[in-house]
Length: 597
Image 1 (cartoon, rainbow, N blue to C red):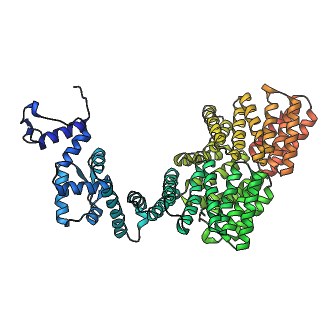
Image 2: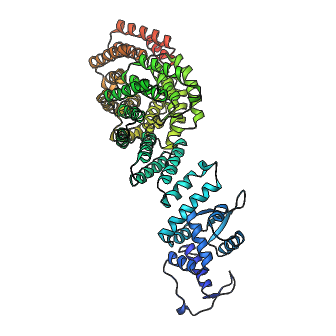
Image 3: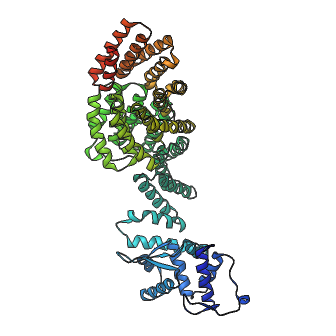
């Protein structure tokens, strides 16, 4: 048996023929009642549906059109609230529309709900309404939802926003769009959040520019920063921030000006413009202290904490983190400010962990990591949880605890992929490639390496230079472990080109370049030694004891291979002592194996 055609079209054709008396009899036993030449069938299913709707009695057609404005799914209580006929009449008409197979019952409890039997039926019915009629009905639906759901409008905010926009309700539409955006952002639906916020701004531009609309425009632009940051759309984010800054100036509002400065500092950090970031962050902090504004002070301080981490001033970063956590009110621990993508308590702790890891203070970092992860999980917010997993991954990776690092990466990567957080995905993939290579999972590491290289190009195109260096580092180490020396060299060189965006990476980049120069397939002892010594000098300046230990191990291996045995033993001894002090068991085993050999 051969099946062709659209079943829905066939169904509607039969219904049309039955309704127009071209067919007689009962369903399943129809017989032709008119000559075939006398039968006219509309050429499309849309035309057929429109004709069927027009043949309905006026009151049923009106009800079907009202239902189409409600949406494809139609709660009975809402329909009853906006329909102007007695409930008994409404129910009987719904039964007839159900019998005619325009609508179907989709829920009986806890509340009766109907749905259009087919999306095309809904589309054609809605399309048959005049624009003014549609607009008036959407506005009435907003009023009805507000009456029906007093005290719990948050559960209906997406529906309210949609109807308020289509009802042309101006500022009310903006308010509901903003609430929908905040709700979406809170549940990590960042694409939805961006659409809601952008739609709100579009409507605001068409409204009179008064204090109310300007303030709402400012606040929405700052709230839009969160999804844009997670989507790594830095240019768009900076554009919105400049608009917000102009509005704050127009309102002569110092508090709003300070919030813009905090956000501008974040944007410039991500673009590798650290001097500008310092300028904006310092201005914001000074303003906060002058105004005794604790929220602004904490927001500015946590940004400066990250800035000092980027610059390699880990002690200052740690000092700021501890001062932030000391004054953070207990009821603000999970609170997310509009200028921060994660709660300050999580943001401060993750940067604290990274700074402690950089200095080799792993036990302190481990203590903070447990607390940070527990707090982050309570937020149920993908970016915040990812922030904690990133810090934990960096801790376990630095210690050489590859199994635990891999476990954290997989959880981190699954979460940020599900939410499409483009900011974190390249870093997580790059770190995964490195860790999998260390675990000997060659095939999986190679797959992640290739993905990471593609994501790197996208990251560069988006202008997030603060992450480019880190991604290049992890991919470079992974490439070297997998034997792709040329790729490692290219990635190392690329990392070196962007160290101005994050000077903290300088010792790590030089260490990678030294390992590459000392590789058996590229052996250049003189250049390798030079890079190791430069890396050691930079590591000493920043206090990066783990990198210093790695360089001693690298020099030991290099000198051992070229016959400088005494110098090799001296470096092995120093590396072993440092690894033991920092409890870096994996690397301690490596150096002891070299000493025995």
